[in-house]
Image 1 (cartoon, rainbow, N blue to C red):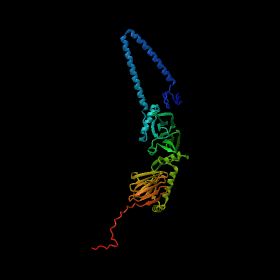
Image 2: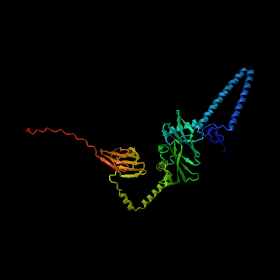
Image 3: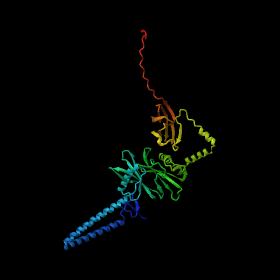
Length: 439
């Protein structure tokens, strides 16, 4: 199929297109200009013939001439009404694209993006909105922006960056990035990626820069046994995209169909963040090293004699002196139910939770481990020294314990404050010189 060039922005569009799918300008092809020229000639000839007929009718019958005038006016009004109705119908068909967002809180942003797409005539490609999010304070001293993604299945997806001017959200063609899917089966469905809905998409701050993070999964053509999860970091200011691709074969692990792959290579903070996100929150991605290590450990445990296993279960690991930690588990191993949490406090890498049974658990986001630092009887928690990660635990009997979360050591304990005893009034004692009164 031959291509034509948009006279406004230079974009290449398919022949026969009425509008440019990049800037929305009308495409005036040679056929279009010939049709308009023929229409003008037809209109001129029609008007000339009508005038001659009107003058002839005026000489023959003035009453008939008046009737003809009314008929012409009526036909003109009817034609205008029909043209208006057709235009409205076409516009309705053009903008009737489904809006789908993974988070209801982003619905307002999706509506704003849809209105802007309608205003700038960017809805003709048939793509639908899959993400939309507002980026607050992306550039100091400038307005906030809205970043959104539209997708046309099997062909491409686009990233739009909307800016606000004079109270209206506008789309600058320079802020549009179109990425071809190269015929891959691309899906943004978070359920298929087993990804947390509060994780993707999101706006994150890394090294003082705002990034719009999104991900999708694609299946390479002709090989359904393999798949890729592509993680992307869209730099809101420069519009540059950093991509990490996790590709591998599907495997069934713990009754889940997952992709075994290697972490993305690179030492930048952005790549590290994406690897951690893939490992912790996109559960369809499993790194091979971690899985092999888990399988080897499981095999070693199965090969141990039953007596050794029993002996190992009976011997508890010794805790350092003055340690507050009584139990440590990976975050994937259940230590408590979320419904058991009555209070949560956060500082730095630590999230500390007070449970209904009075125990206290600390979660370290850097290591991904839960540590029980108090076994029961606590009624309140709070940070005593936020900068140094020292938590204060108050028991039901008002005794207090302070724990350094960085090393799990007890800093000190305090007894419950004792109420002051009121001094009893002294009884009058007889003076030495005075004799005691008898009876």
